[in-house]
Amino acid sequence: MSLFAPEFELVREALPQRVCGVVAALRGLTVIVDALPLPVGSLVSVESRRGGVAPMLGEIVGFTSDQAVVMLFGHAAGISAGDRVVGEQISQNVGVSERLLGRCLDGLGRPVDGLGSIAEREPRPINPAPIAAMRGLPIRKPLATGVRAIDLLTTLGRGQRLGIFAGPGVGKSTLLGQIAQRTEADVNVI
Image 1 (cartoon, rainbow, N blue to C red):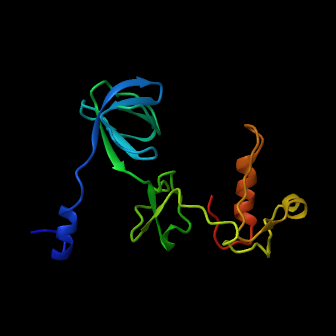
Image 2 (tube, helix red, strand yellow):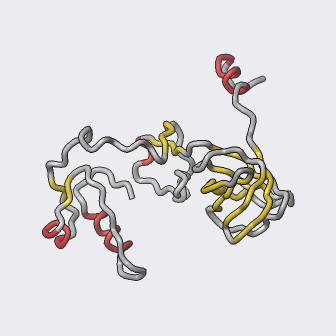
Image 3 (tube, rainbow, N blue to C red):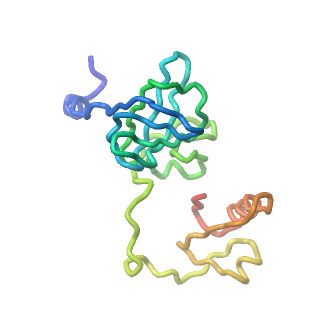
């Protein structure tokens, strides 16, 4: 008995076959893969031929005429020549919903707060097409961050993005935490 309703069974069977390549070389966290015809930005997993090693995720960051260059998101321990590399997503996306409010996610949209998975999410591209400057809504209302120096000297507006840049150990995370706790915004995306 199928777990899918009959109308979804055709869709499940129509999914394209997985595109696979083979590890040819490893240089640090960069994996050179033979026969993997996927575009730059594709999400891939490297599956070790030895059992007990979880697949390692990476992103295609370049290519030559017959090889793809994959940058791993984590460590390279356990990878060897001949391991299989499988295409996971051609254009990376992350599931979004109202249920994400108050949750902590990693860079791929997976929960890391120990509160379980998040159901009913709609996929959205990680790198969507930018909104044309003249089509975006104008920023008219100030947003109080709760940090007096920012509110006085570099007032932010509702809907504005903010970049915090500084050297290591200067207090970027502390400042970000203060803004997240004290701002009058309903939702913070950090």
